[in-house]
Length: 340
Image (cartoon, rainbow, N blue to C red; front, side, top):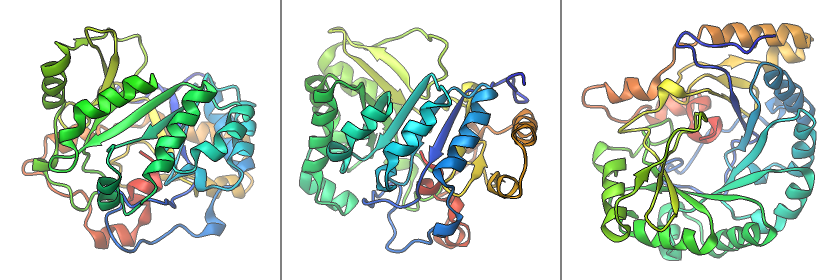
């Protein structure tokens, strides 16, 4: 079947697969509350079901796959899923993780065929991480990054910059990334589901981040688009270091977004901000053929008009996207359920 394009001619090019909604951290920009409603365990897709759907998405042109969560390394025997997904021949199979369990599990993941890894690292200060995430395992995150560097798998670091929390660490994080030979991506604090403490004043914009970087390194030079619709705008510093900035709040990349998101229980979302998703688990378990599922996926993508971040940018006086009561009524609205 021909690769489908949506109403804005955006192709279906990549798939983010959340393998669990559980997480072993409580980051303030994603999971700030004390209690959460979790997806029923019996509703979660099996590895075989995930692989079957990935193969169908791949046949429609989605050749880049990223495993997310929650924290994906909490899903038991994840290396088995990686091995199965490699059979769908993705051009790129990546993992986003908070890094706590990475040093222990990475050898098996690499042997199974994982191509690269992105580790979330918002601070270099253990006490600050404890305050912001309710986790005292900062050393494990650093060990995970070191393990990835040592084993030779390509590594990127993601740092969500929040005013009043870690905006004073922009240059320190950059220096650390250099020592690890890892590309650092600064991420604007997004007003997605789960960010119940979000406010515009806490957002450190792309322009502000670039100004801080330029103050020490010299002017960052924008890199030319290589045709890959990645969320990060990339810049080369005078010493050759490359950084990225995901400016979803101040400069959304909706026009080039080619990704869908599959939750751990099989709901497919066409946008991180979408209010509704399409259940693929239901037809899958009711016996739909691969051809029927492919037709359903293609038709849904062709009808896609989502430009959620742009719509939020145009919203006067924008505030929190979902209140706690709304999130508890439907946990699919949570960032940790959809995957970032």
